[in-house]
Length: 137
Image 1 (cartoon, rainbow, N blue to C red):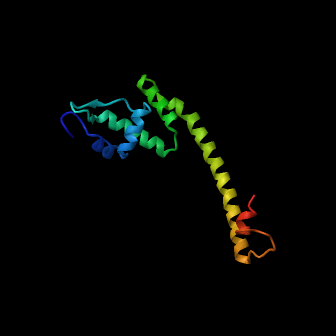
Image 2 (cartoon, rainbow, N blue to C red):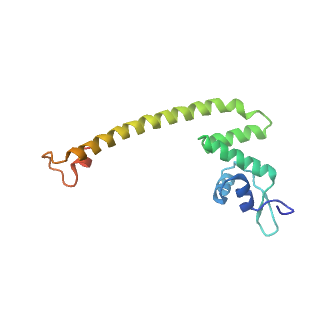
């Protein structure tokens, strides 16, 4: 740590994120603009690393950046952001359930296509390339 804080690389390493992620979070307002050196380099403090770590953990939970931004804004206003978390988690659970449903359908389609290949694809169709692919809905 430098006398004036951490460089972007050091902050990224400490929080377990990339430099690019830090720039994105800053540009989207999730991370307040850090202090800068005389030559314009960003310098991060322990509070910035704490926010970056929170963002990483929230992203690991599947929260969208917009949701994280709201939680951080509520926290910066001195309120408890956990009160706002439940509806976001419910939404993410619904999104994950929908993705699972779609993936299960895809899995069934792939399994059926694979079975058609196993038993042979010469079914008299006029497919120009591959009937297994061309007959997919």
